[in-house]
Image 1 (cartoon, rainbow, N blue to C red):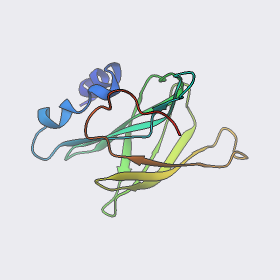
Image 2: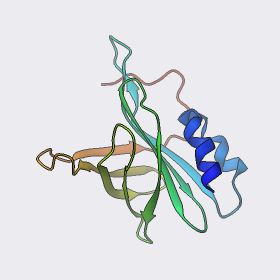
Image 3: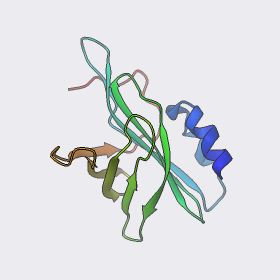
Amino acid sequence: MIRFLAILAGAPALAIPALAAAAGAADSAAVYSNVCAHPETGELRGRRIVILRFPDANYALVQFAEGGMLPPEAMQVRLDADELITFAIVDGPMKGTRFRGMVTDEMLTGAFSTYADPRLAPEEVALPRQRTAPEPMPTCE
């Protein structure tokens, strides 16, 4: 499993749709993203979360776009029967960021917060599920 996640962390996150076909019957992968390109500069902004469900545990690959895509961070997530999802990023440039939200087949909603600076307001997100890679990248509104 760790080797599988290491391979995924090095792969471009939009290559993930092939995961569902490669996964076993009880396994699944879903990409949720609001990443878009600034209409004038072309810089990327937004968030992408890939949820990987396996019988023994659930994982996420999380990417932040701040002008360009930051490297993905992989971590185990808590996902309960009511589809409440929680995780914390423990490495990389977004270290100290936590997420709590709800996941459905169509949308992942919730909030990113940081314990590095608790004065910062949580960042609310609504990430639609991406069933195919957008070509070209959608323009930010």
